[in-house]
Image (cartoon, rainbow, N blue to C red; front, side, top):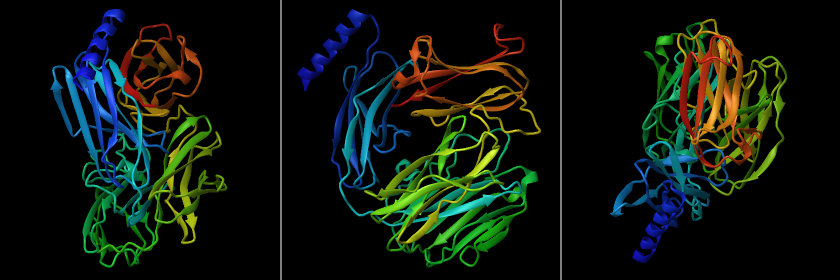
Length: 487
């Protein structure tokens, strides 16, 4: 081990001498102590500069779009300038393949990643689960579905491998109906709140908040029949009103000041064979394409799935029905929704079925008219603002939102750490409003000699410039933010 370390240090010194630039060495080891639900990850690195970030990056092998960033549970300096990092992962899904690496950020300008490794958890029970959708609908017939429930492999914090993920910050002004669960580690809220199932006598409390314009009230909330899923009471509290969720399947919220709801569920009774589908999410990838995906929870061998959508006033469209062999307790489904450029929004949902019957995720509303879509509102933003992209890290696509309080010639460009322009996302006059633009690392095209199809993992910067006089003048507003592409 000492000989390997000495050789590594000599190699780094020679590299710096020959090329005259910092070099950070990262060695990622294969996973150890693999069980059906856990694994040990380890890495070693020698930084050249001030370390500003050091984390494991991990995802399911069948989920190319979403990497989770996990800080090491143990990191120490094992020798002068040499750092060791380790992390024990818990509550993994049995018989599921994961990919991971280790990444180090140096002085907020350089981003290094180590070798990627795969491992497969051992086979084991698919556990028990209860997933219950709550669908909110406002006066404009916009929908937002969130879900709560239990799963054997859930933890006390949010579980990316079960579909839980923290939502981006809420906009300064609510433009369209949305709702989120707030609990445990979910500081920004989540569309899913899945607790660990450990006893048929447990009691769980869920907190969900709905956000909407005052003019869009009253808001109705509906849920399926849950009598077979709980032996005890399930109570929904809104303001001073208590609702027995087992004796009815809907409620009405009339007061915007009573939009924070609480659910108390007692004595769960998971069914012997289960099939549930989580709230779908997605990203606009081009002018008429929306990539939708959802998690499916089942202890059975196969299921059929598809997505449905409609513009709210027209006919219902469907993707092709796909038969999936479920190799583990949690499976991700995905497909492309093709929408008309005449749509101002569409409502969509994920549907699964097998011998148990047909199950739906509930409906969500996606506002849309183009990749540079701005949802038309009577009020104009009061300030310029460039928001953090989401998701971040991303692969291959991400969304960037910005606000313009006044009209102006607007550019949104992406740069690499060397300052080379990677892509121009916006380059035209824009009226005052709220805008959203997508960036894809597989979009093709070149800028400053950089092929976006060949972008590697690392840090990139996106820059908003707004000028009141024209494209060649100095910007009256400029803002730059950092994002991370993780292949």
